[in-house]
Length: 481
Ligand code: DCS
Image (tube, rainbow, N blue to C red):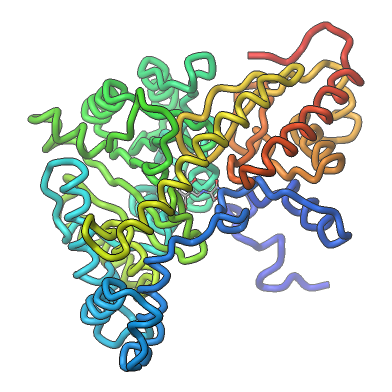
């Protein structure tokens, strides 16, 4: 048979190379089992509403009114919606040229970009310029746009943490660049060692790769660590010395579950460092409405802020954004609301605060239940989830299990996760999907299942794990750090 223009053989090789484990083999098997009627607990994606998190009331009221502006003319509108929601809906509609059905500027609505800049300024205590903030369809699209501008070919390398969220590895593959890994240290609570970074860069350079950018995920996915201010300062110095653009993925900045290391943005640390760093380091920071106590993943809202990028580069990034015409307009309104929520004294303030605090406090408890649960299991060690939405336990597989996985033609952690899924319905992502050191195995779960279901889930996990370990246990030669 003749080869078609778009056959597997003629497909862009970069597409074939690209892997995305969060929706990979485990997810597909879980979907099949669900169709067969098995109860599946989807902890593979950080998708809070899918696991029962309720949307915050105020933003939904505002966006509902923006979507149905005729309600604003209804004499009874005040009986259904609080006055501050009505006022905010009118405010956002006044920022659009034709309501939610019209394209906006491809950088986003100027009024919302201004609200984002004001938020950053309040958060960091340093000025932020709305002209350097672009709104995007979720943080993912922003990351892809920026990587697209950085990567010129396979000679360009991007430093990416390992373990990492596969948006980075997949996009770098897709764009034909080279991923330069730096390893986070599990025994130091997934800390980042700058000496390790230096080695990674030196090694890449010795292979002829031009290292152009560095990614940090803070708080970390899948690892859950929060970077200290001192660590961020070291990273920024490193980027300054090595002339790297820093991509600061800060989508989990609301998700903090300890008090020792509150979130601090890379932008704030950079500004505090002063000259020559504050004017010298190029930084792009990303945020989203998908995470935190908002969890509005399906709305697809995000932004990035550029620091120290030359105006001509910003112009070119604008051009690239223009190809997609306009980011999602309803999501831009969610972003506006996230960065300027109800204030003390507003009618909706108490309810908003109650709802957001309730979610955050429950996530904090769930992070604890999950880590403690994993640490009570045979052959499992797990760092505490300091932030973000995931737990990333290390599974110390006995040689018998590794052997059995080989026989089944599976990577050992995939083998373990598939068995877990079949036995319990818990759908996780094997650590190999995020990258891990050779011979060390993990899995990732979200901490998002409903709090009341958590003890039962952890019991069922422990029962499966301990039986699995006993089955394959011969007490010698475990996989381990
Ligand atoms: N950056 C990180 C570190 C993420 O974890 C995610 C989503 C994104 C960016 C992109 O999010 P949005 O495009 O929705 O803004 N995390 C995925 C994950 O690991 N589970 O759920 C989605």
